[in-house]
Image (cartoon, helix red, strand yellow):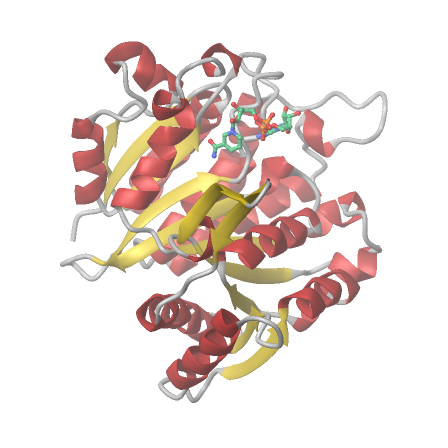
Length: 366
Ligand code: NAD
């Protein structure tokens, strides 16, 4: 089977961090014989500059065909005044919507060398490795009715939390599948104590769980879950939750581990004909206009997003681990970009130097 990959570097630091990933993709071809059929295209502000739209229809069509899309970042001050319909972020939202990426995977993994970076005590986060799965295409951000309406002599703002059984079923299945590949523990979070959608969520997840007898399923109210994530996050393996709670809990969990420059993500949809899921991989961070073009960006979030692609799209879990361990060993050597340094007098590595170091560590892994 061929491995097709669409690369969309985007704006700001996107092209800088993606250039390092491209070198790593070439390394896998040269040194491991794992070839990727790579095409590159525009998304965000740069696509608007060329085509007058943040995502050209041809790019959208390509994204639907490939095994995985890898995106850098979009946006920047140059585009802030554009009409909402053509803002760079609309390109990203169109990809997520038309590819129907309902399952958003956000790992919170603490690299040993960065345990001091967390705002929590070192022993609480050292060795942390959890995965939060957030439902991405339904729930209160999409439910109707929504809007600001007149009611009597005042206005009322309305959003509707709405989930169908099938929407819960499919994201629950993706969470159970993932738990099977990890520690076989899944915690589902909702507010079944005060929300009917939460009651349905719990019922459906429990029902799906009967198909996965090896996975230990627990349920937690989302507010208690937030407390437990800061108290003792290592009690969790995989967490599945809805769009709104997932938005909050995944940011909370991600920050347990330190810098935005280290955080990858994946958004997965239904399986395609070849059995691989529709998939978009991207770092959590934005285009960082404050440091763009200066060689200061940390490429690790984008590199680790590619590692997620190796694992979840190309079924190359061992190679994904090889790449993650290479990043870990670079950090352990003390090589850091500026965002990972909190001491004076240490010269930070540039984006390219960080890429060089990861390549060297990959060589050493052979
Ligand atoms: P940001 O993530 O771009 O930057 C926040 C801070 O983190 C900045 O100080 C930045 O320098 C730093 N930072 C981010 N990534 C880094 C990296 N890899 N290495 C080192 N430092 C890093 O968020 P923002 O400043 O709120 O937004 C900037 C632009 O990015 C806006 O136009 C926003 O709309 C867009 N944005 C895009 C995405 C995306 O493409 N997925 C996500 C968030 C924001």
